[in-house]
Image 1 (cartoon, rainbow, N blue to C red):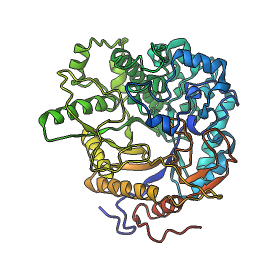
Image 2: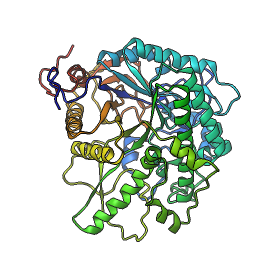
Image 3: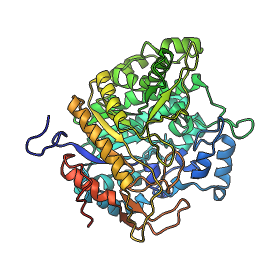
Image 4: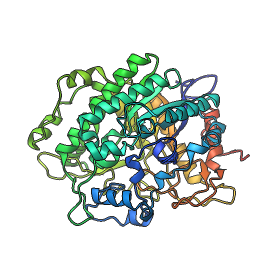
Length: 509
């Protein structure tokens, strides 16, 4: 169980590192031949507005067609931070060097599809974009970090969204397969670990962000017209399942040494009370979450969706060969984002429906919460890892886990972020317990190891990083990098391969 030479429960070669996404760090949205992507229209939502949502509003960063047209015609009216990112496109060497200085073994990142194919379906790829990622991967290897690369992380090419409805169309599936084949061939030997879609189950919450589906205009301009449009969402899900499976097959054909996984937002649910009805609600919600990883890991639609489809008049349009493709394109490993757990109360529905939200309104009185109201549950991490491994018996990579907070940075970008250290320590402790339980976990990537633009609200002030970046929510700042206290803690933790979780004797250099 414990390595006698290191005192660590983590296996030798465990991949410690951090995770990012192209749309949240790169910037340079109109440079290097890159085309527009849906992420370029994700508006800034302040912390105050985020907390002020009531009723059934539009999902964060969702754009109706009217809003999108206005942003296209008058971009100066909008604060669109993902167009700026943290300027990784120009500053990747210095930013990667800071991560390597912590001892990172892995750097999770994504490729911007529209940087390779500006319209998503161009006749030829953009060589300047391909060259950029060649340079980034080369730099990662020079610094001793293995790149783990997501093909599509919430940034469908805008052309495919506007012309074809994103993944509502099989045209987009075909374009994705060609894009995947292009990058697998180009980076064979440079990238050993791939992921297909980031948090693929997020289509239930925001089909625009996750799948490039532009919302029709709501009647009053505030409410989500796709709330409960399950037929559309599950058809889009099917198309993405097929696209993912085709990418897995291509990856195995082109580079048999590479491994390719899926990625889901893992939602671990607890019953509000011992009432059997509340436990039944947990079962319902679990099924809607497990559905995505079941299809990608097992290669077929699970039994429990049939009743939901039948009684909600959902008819998945499959093309000939789709079922065979899903079976042949199962993933090599499972990856998850884990941030919180949820409380479930029986809704009284004879045929349950997904909540359509990734945040439960019911508060857990036994858990503290982050500044953004996210429950903090390290023990839930161990619980969910055991559930996942028991279900699939596939290796697991933690592709996201982290804490967003309002940091008070000094003039050097330093902050005494003991709250972040505590969050990291307690989650890694439970990760170690899961490994002792027998769960096969081969890597852990902290979300946002360098301050970046938040996914849901496009805030920079919601900081996750061990490395600070001198930027605000409106792009003001010097881009100067700083090392927070958590930088030195994670460095110590990595150096011990997870054996030294003590918060004492953190050496600030």
